[in-house]
Every structure is written in structure tokens, then in C-alpha cells.
Amino acid sequence: MYSERSFGDVVSQERRGIDQPNHRVLGHVVQCDGARAVISATIDPSASEEGNANNYWTVGKMISINLVDARTVGIVYDIRKPDRLWEGSTQHSIEVSVELVGEVRDNPETGAPVFDRGITTYPCVGAVSHRIRARDLAAIYDLGGRKGVTIGNLAQDEAISANIAIDDTLSRHFAVVGTTGVGKSTAVSLLVRKAVEARPDLRILILDPHNEFAAALPELAIRIDTNTLDLPFWMFRLEEFAEVLFRGRDIESEEVDLLRDFIPQAKHLFRNPSGGSYIRRTSDALTADTPVPYRIADLLKFIDERMGQLDSKDERPALKSLRGRIEAVINDPSYRFMFSSRMIDDNIHRAIGHIFRVPHEGKPITCFEMAGLPSEVVNAVCSVLARLAFDLALWSDGKLKLLLLCEEAHRYLPSDPRLGFAPTRHALARIAKEGRKYGCFLGVVTQRPGELDPTILSQCSTVFTMRLANDVDQSIIRSAISDSSASTLSFLSSMGQREAIVFGEGVATTMRMKFERLELARIPGRAKALAGNEHGADEDDVDLAGIVARLRNVQKTQMTQAPLSGVSVSPVKQAGEPDFRRPAAVHQATLDIESNFGFTSNSASRFGNRTRQD
Image (cartoon, rainbow, N blue to C red; front, top):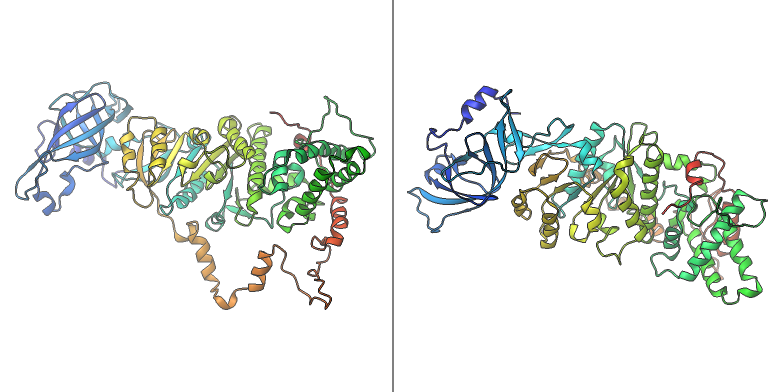
């Protein structure tokens, strides 16, 4: 900790006393109001010429004030020369403003320094002040026996490690905030690695809107995108399913009411193919939110039957519109993760186990890449995943520890309740408020804390604050800090790369530190770029046909020439693949898929038998 200096050397070199030479005494207290103190000091201009700038007072550094039984610790937040005149040949008197944060006392049995927040004995006028000794500085940030991990070094003394209490940081939730380009994603990658190393039982799901973390965590993470995501439509609650159907547009309440009636009937028919008509019973009620499988074909059948009834004249426009929305979604390749035939023979516990890494098979992290996901469905999918994370932790009786890490959280947790998606907000808020009891933790990453739901941010007991330039964002962080070292946050707009101010339950006291430097291959974004350069791609390798196919939102397949009649021919259908593109085959393709949808496993017993509990 002391860079190979022995304890005795440290004490001898840093002993402070009233009889010390003048160059060791930096100043004397001339004013104290209980929370702050003013120190009168002098500066020798020749010190900088001799390369000994350590005698200068520096904003942001901690200092020590000698008392009889203790050493009061303060943070320098303002330095000024009253007359504002400077001459290079004489000593100058200055005033140093200090915020008092605590005091250090020596343990009478061991002699080791012990730090306590708050002040019991205030500095008197004339008390000696000086640079804080290294052993006292280390004692200030000592975790007091809690399990800690090293994430960097102190900004004031790089010889002292910056440690956080990993269990408290995770269980009480945490946030990483900072403007673009300050190393926020790199810090998150480092924290994730340290968390997995310290907690081998931890599973992490990263909501990654930029598709950058998987390349930075290759040995620890799997990648899930729109091509590999298996999330059946019947796992969506009614609000979430409606969000998918309406694709971000205003939801028609009449059509949602129809879904609320039809979906329970379709679920009942799936569970009881010959059980007669559906009757609501309080003891065995199926609702549109009950996570029980059903077939889209049955849902469409009920809609058609209702349209054929004589008394449904007023409902027919809404029924036709609802049927059109359902057909449009199931025929859109972007939504195959919900309606794909890949889940025909699969059990739901396998899909959930793959997403949440149960078992983790040496890779406990899942990077859910959302860049390729339709923007209108991101909210619904995030809501489902957040609900599943909480339920898995709840029903595992505390055996499963899950961290849900939300990158760019202000996108789907906005401060304005009129924006975003309410179910997503509620699902994440539930984790923030109740997840600690069941082993479900929340990590929030954002560059705009002022645009983040304040309820979520207030539940994050440890905050890693990197450079913030916006005044609103800075005010949000200042209002969140709880201890007496709020002056530290005055440096938010000028901190360097990889620097952060950490405060909350995960540290002993507010700490300004610098994150460890990672290799380029482990930095999100850089790792992806390096992987691309290894392939030596150039403009001749660009597959324009593949790009156009993705723009058209269809799979890249062989195209045939259109006939002279002007009727376009759809791309050749792959063997065993339902044709989602030809209108004439729409209904039959739906029946082909849904007739095979099965739920033959008992693995989802707790999910399938639970009804919504609000």
C-alpha cells in the first residue's frame, strides 16, 4: 500500500508536530464555523523553481489539522490571495478554505489510525495544518472489514488503492453517470469484471443499446440479438403485447379490451382442447397477463367468430383492425424472436436459462444487443426481461443472484412520466425497491442523470460520478450526495479521463479516484473496432445486397426475376421455413406455425400457474 516503504519510514517521514520545521507546516487555522475552516498560509515562489511544488496548496486535496487527541480531516475547495497581487521574489500570504469531513484517531491498542465521519472536537484558532500523511489517508477509505475489490487508485495518492465494498455496491444497487467520452463504458466493463471475479455466483444481464460489451467480455459473456433471442409472445403481458401490436403508436382502448377477452379464451383452449367453452372462475382464473401459452391461430379464430356474429356490427371495425395488426406482426421478420418456429420443440425453461445463464457454463454474463431490435418493441422486451429477472430471483429462494445492468437507462426510464413505457418503468422500479431482498440487483448507466427517473436514481445507494458538463445533471448528483464532503462535486465539470467521484454505501467516504487502465481489447467499442480491423475489411468487401436485404427487413436469400406481368415474386423460401412474405400464404403460414406450438414441459410450473399479482 505504501509503495514498498516500511511502516516505520512512513511514520518518521510524516510525523507532524508543533516543533516541525516551517517547510512541513503549511498553515494555521484562523477561522472555523463548525462545517468549514479558513487556514492562513504562505507560499514560497522559489519552491516551484526548485521542483518542490508539494508545498503548494491544491484544490481537491485532503489536509490534516492537528489537535490534541485527533487530527481533523478537511478538503480544500477554495484558495485565494486577498490582495490578488503577485511578485516572484517574496513569500505570499494566502487563505485556504476547507470543508471539514471527519477526524482520525489512533487506536490506543494497535496504534493504527481510525477514521470517523463527523467532528467531535473542532479546530481552534492557531491549530497547525499540513498535508495529510499516507497512513491517515488510507484509513479514511478503509472499508472496515467489508469485502472489497480494487478498481483503481486514489487521485490524491496513486500509491493507495481505491477499493469498493462489492457486496454493498451490488445489493444496494449502483449508478454510473458521466458525459460521452469520459470512459463510462470502460468503467462499467471493469466493474463487471471485478464483480464476477468477487462473486462467482452472480449472473449479469446487460441491456446493451450499442452492441459493444460482448466484444469486450469475450471470455465471460454470450451475445443475444434479434437472431438468437427466443422470447415467446405469450410471456408478454397485455400492456406489453399491445405495445408490440401498435408499434409505439397510440393504443386503441377498444382493441385492447377485445384482446383482454380473447387471450384468456385462447389460453383455456390450449390447456383444455376438449374442455368446452371458457368460464371465468375465481379459483382457476386465466387472465390476459397469466404467463400461460396459447396459439395465435386460436386468437385469430375467436376474432373471426366474433365478426361473424349478428350482434357484433359495432365492433367489426375494431375487430378487423385488431386482426390486421396481429397478422402484420407475425408476418414481420423483425418479430421472429416472438413467433419463431425455433421454439416449437423447445421448452421455455431452456430459453429463460439461456438468457439468464442457468447454468452459466463458464460465461455468467449475457449481453442483450438491442441495436438491431425495432425501436417500438425495445420497451416491451426490456419490460419482460426485467419482470423475468425479478421472478427468477424471487422463486429461486435467494439461490440465484442476478444483476440487471441498464446501459443508457434514460432511454427507457425517462424522468418525464409521459415518455417511455410505463410497464418497463414499473418492472425496473420493483427491482430497485424490492430486489435486494431476493437477490436481484440493478445497475444504472446514463450520460444524462437529469433525464432519468428520479425514483430509480434515488434507489442507487452507490454512485460513480464521472465528468458532467450539464448544470442540471450536476445539480441532480449534488442533491443525491448525503455526507459532508459535497464540495468534492465542484470538480464534476473538470475531471479527467477515467476519473470518478464515488459516494454512497459502497465506499467508506466520498472518494475521488482513477479507474484502472484496461487493455484496448477489453474496452467496449475499441474491442469491436479491433475485431473488425483484424478481418482487413475494405470497400470491396462490402455486401450491398446484404445491406439492402436488411433494410428491407427480409432474410438474405436468392432472388428470382419478376415475370413480365409485373407481379413480383417473393424470395425463394428456405426448406422448412414458413413463408411470411406472400399474402396468399399468410393465414396458412400462421396455422402451420401455431399448430406446432407446444408446451410439453413442466419446467415452467411456477411461471405457468402464477397469475398477475399487483
